[in-house]
Amino acid sequence: MKLTIIGAGPGGYVAAIKAAQLGAEVTVVEESAVGGTCLNSGCIPTKTIIASTDALRKTKTLSDFGIELASEAIPNLSKIIERKNKVVSNMAKGILALFKNRSIKLVEGKGSIISPTVVRVEKKDGSTEEVHTDKIIVATGSRPAEIPLFPFNGKTILSSTDVLSLSEIPKSLIIIGAGVIGCEFACIFSELGADVTMLEMLPRAVSTEDSEISEALEKELKKKKIKLMTSAKIIDCITFNDSVKITLDNGKEISGERMLVSIGRALNTENLGLENAGIDKGFKGEIKVNHQMETNVPGIYAVGDVVGGMLLAHVASKEGVVAASNACGIPVDMDYSVVPAAIFTSPEIGSVGLREHQALERGISINTGRFQFRGLGKAHAIGEISGFVKIIADAETDEVLGVHIIGPNASDLVHEGALAIKSGLTASELGDMIHAHPTLSEALMEAAEDVHGEAIHALKK
Ligand code: NAI
Image: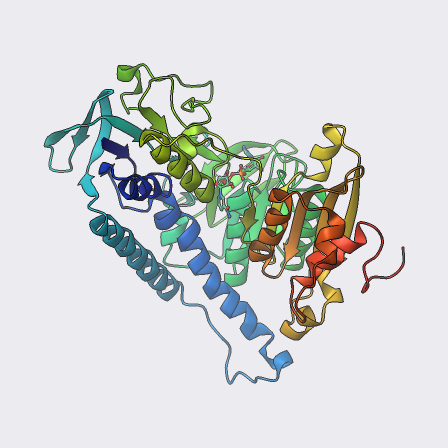
């Protein structure tokens, strides 16, 4: 079976490897670099930069740990970016090696669908190639959405991609949108010494998280002197040679050397020839798929951001595995019931399952338990005591429905919660499991015990 995949991001390249494992003859068409947004301008670059800002932050408390620094630690953004580029290029080489190892053919250029069995590739040199195929997976991802009133100019009004190549730390940075990207960059640039102001149109930051997590993050942002204005409405923006000035509907004016716009993502579903094959799209421009990730056209699948669900690399990869399996004749359904998510602010956020408001909206009666990291010896030992774990359990069955963490290593810790939900564990069962001491994971055990008021290291309520 010949399979052609358009897009080599975490949806497309994972689908390619899975299909090759299952015996398909796979061609991947990619117009830019393999790895997509995740590797080139998203997850990996930002986490690499965060490793630098984490190291910088640690230097500020070194004397608390008994280490004297002879002189002040100074961030060098060019070197930080150079390291980021090296990490990205090594990972890209890894993907290419996996392709070679699995005999996956990579065709560089812009792919579009001519018919359900033909993909045309326009190459950079102007030539075109037609790839004849049995099945197709569309995995073309998304791009930063812009505000029509003041589109990206790459100099003062920046996208999350532009911001990754800045050679100098701006003195002041305005960030529009206090979602995942906005909050991650706010932490990065404030650690680097920029004066950061965030504007969010909704009443709270990271509004898709549990409200207690948003509230805790807002406090942490405040500690870093990041100014967050919620329920903000921008009515005007003027750009100067080396700065930006915005006006809010309440008349307030805010100026900054640079401005990052992180208000969500636009789906790359245009100019792909979807209409040539009669593929249905939804009202947001997303490609409509069924549980097997198949579009309305048999043999054409779509995965990742283009299907418009959760715009997360790990969701795209799982969808890629599901689409590849189905394309290769192995029926599998995509299961979105347990999707852990992580936000790499400092401290980090990890969440899975229902938020409290979602449980209440669904009419589920719940019990909640919390445990502050400051109650743990390990948190004190490493000097990271901010944050807590919150567990939401069904009041009738005691089943764990949601786990929400803000604090050290939250992005890793959340997976214990994910496994608990996936396995249908009760809060009592989670709390009953022996957790190694001294670890940060003990916070999950204690939060689970706290669902029934039984946490050992918490004061009686
Ligand atoms: P987002 O949807 O997380 O946040 C955008 C924010 O901008 C929202 O709070 C929204 O209310 C606000 N907003 C929209 N228009 C506005 C306006 N005109 N003025 C002020 N505020 C406005 O989108 P974001 O942060 O751009 O991230 C895009 C996607 O990438 C998300 O779906 C996210 O899940 C994903 N992502 C995931 C990461 C992770 O898993 N760690 C890291 C970065 C991005």
